[in-house]
Each structure stands twice: as structure tokens, then as C-alpha cells.
Image 1: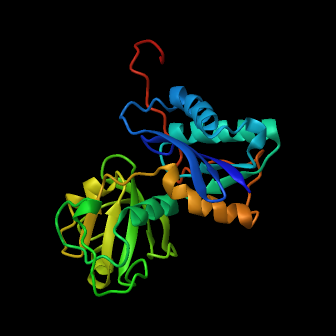
Image 2: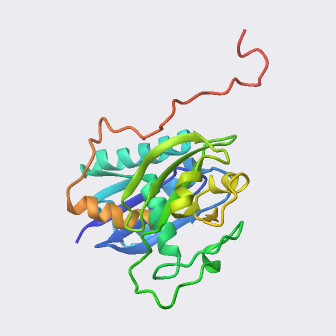
Image 3: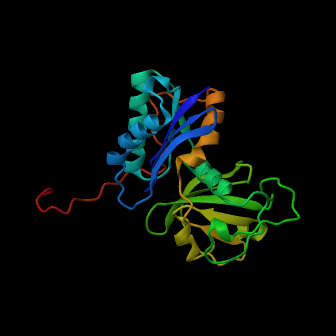
Length: 260
């Protein structure tokens, strides 16, 4: 009966959960814009263990969102996960952030294939279920496009089928009206994540649906982490680094005199 601690800090959401055998025991999340992950993360970890009545030595593995995303957020989450694993000598699971975002978005939609409207902005509650379709979990004509804001008009994105098969590896790209033109000619695309809002401004297609309020959380990590644990798909605690995708560029401090 595997007990897994889940940590997600790749975007503005600070999310921690504790699961046993694929079911949640406790979850804590903060979706504010404060980016106070460093202050909240250890508190959330303590709270979920207390609520679930699980001590640290009762945890079998730690799952952490591997990126891409916020450089600082990823460093905070991975550092906490590594420290936990080192202290307890337990394995570390690195979960693909994009796949987890696609998973949590798919789980938020009504069961069965969705007949998606071409509204310029839509939430999960607005997407109707096609009643005469079998409950297969999604149409083969649908693709999920998780997006994470990378500032200005650039996003990190990937493309997945409803079964979470990757059809476009994660990439960083400046979005224009032409970016998804060919894909949208053949598929209905569900754009999700905080990068979807900027896409909505430039992509005009009836095949595009935008769910910007679907963000990376531990809720999307659970099935992926459980599968990786069962397959013993672990990463090296000593050498694992988050998947930044792009090199970190520090801004020049505005305090006068720090640089000559």
C-alpha cells in the first residue's frame, strides 16, 4: 500500500497532497498570485501528514512536478522533495508537468467525449457532453494543449491525446495566429493553463477551446505518479534537476549602486 507525498510548485499554485494506493488522503492548495511557495510548502506538508495521520517514516516515495514552469517555483519544490527523500532514504518520482496539466484538465471535464463549442472563453462547466457517444473518455479528434506562461507572448506547451499520449513534445514558442493553424484544421484543441489566455487573444478558430483556469496541481499528478511508482520509474535524488527548458536569466537589480 504505497503512500506518496506529491508536490507541485511549477506555477503560481502551491499544491501538496498525500495519497495511498491511488486515493487522496489529504490535499492543500493555494492559488493566490502571491507566489509564497517557500512559506507555504513545508506548512502544507505538515498539514497533510497530520490530517492523514501519517508520519514521515510512513511515506514510501515523493512525487514532484519536474517542469517546465517558474524557475524559482521549481527549485523550491524539487529542493523540498530531495530533502525529504534524502532524510528518509525513499525514491523520488519526477512527474511531467505538461502531462499532469492535461490530466487534471481532462478529469475536470464531463465524462465521455465532449462536443466542444467554439466560444472565445469557456470553463469546464460550459462544455456539454455528447449523449449519444460511448463513455470512452474523449474523442480521437480532440487534443489537449497544456500551456504555461513564459512571459510576453511566449509559452511552454505540448500536445496530448485524450489518453495522454504525447504527440508534440514540450517546446517554448512565441504564439502567433499561425502557430496552431494546421493542427486546428484537423483537431479540436483544448488549450489549458495560464498560457492559454494569451493564446485566446491571437487564435481565432471554432476548433479552439480555452480553459485558462485549469492550472497544474497535485490532482493531475496522482495517476501518473502512481503508475511510475508501480513501474519503479524513479530519478536519481542526487543528480536530478528540474526541466527548465530555458536557461534562467536574472533581472538586473533596481537598487542603485549594486552594479558599477
